[in-house]
Image (tube, rainbow, N blue to C red; front, side):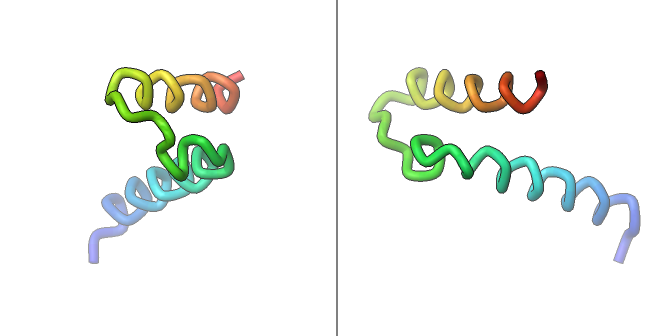
Length: 49
């Protein structure tokens, strides 16, 4: 059990949970990887703002 690694892991998991609130990202409707990446960028920008 490493405390620093656990903190980083928790942060990443929380980020993915926030991104999955956007249904399109959670279900992956996009067939192409580039389109899916764009759909991940949009909620990420919204979280950042």
